[in-house]
Image (cartoon, rainbow, N blue to C red):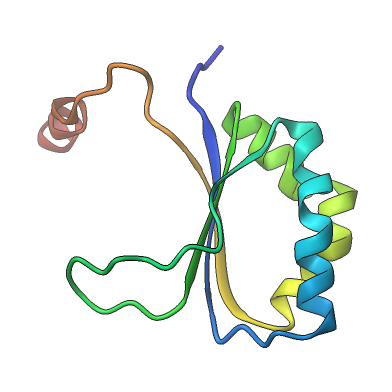
Length: 114
């Protein structure tokens, strides 16, 4: 069994604040908490170190990628999903974090050996 955490990451731009977005924000925590989800990044302004950034970044951490997938597919989240997607330009993804003790040379080895 994997001990890697899972993450739901969203990049949002052109968020049109109104009643539906506010309702989405009010309801989202209740959808991810049963899956062990917790805020990692939400509502903070990024400090741009290089490049161009326009929008918001949201990260929700889960105990595993399976928990992240189960949350995203859950009826509770699917019920509110359009409150965000209809009122913002956004990209959402689910990603598995690295294992404890991960080193970049592991990926380097995979890239070199195909």
